[in-house]
Length: 290
Image (cartoon, rainbow, N blue to C red):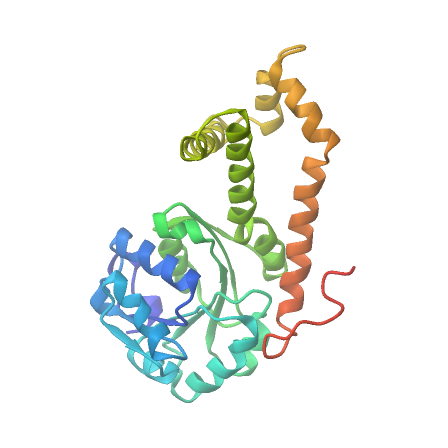
């Protein structure tokens, strides 16, 4: 069945090429959303141990053959490192047809590069989810390749919206979105842990402090999303003259808190653009020096 003829409410077999963290996160999310059954998932990885790791989610079909996944599934999600993409494409190219929909989760690898290694007319979509898709609260960014149809984009949007929220962008924005939302949970986890450590320093047990910090972040996010207020306005609302919050803001500004986050996003954006040019996972001396 061609991907364009199905909806995310009744997906046919879905194949994952790769069994790393993001593959596990998306598998958990899709299963929780009920858009695909564990019997209709097929996952490949380079080693049998890695391939079988998805069985913890109830996945019944795992293999070390990328080609086997492509032969069994029309919707393919390539959850591999950028430097591994070329070998994956080489494996599946002989059996790929125009009925396949190839969704790349690899940072930095453009749709043009992918299309050059696949049969003419192959449908390619780039996607950058983040790990909270596992609890159906992820943010996923996606962009169209040269040959996808509107139906394909709608299908991918439905798939991604089942595990959070999705945004379609022009492909030139994908590296930026990788730095903002793809890496975003990392910034949140570090902030959460720092807040909790502040509580520990003041005398609160760490486990309780993490819960308080996490729920505080959830509540703050909901006020932005549900009320439509600007974060700066909400910050100003709690900063009473000579109060505790404005004292904390002064310390954060003095330490360059906002600038650090901005630089972190920018560094991740630059890195995303560099990853596709690295070979065999080797780094370069030029990485992140601009």
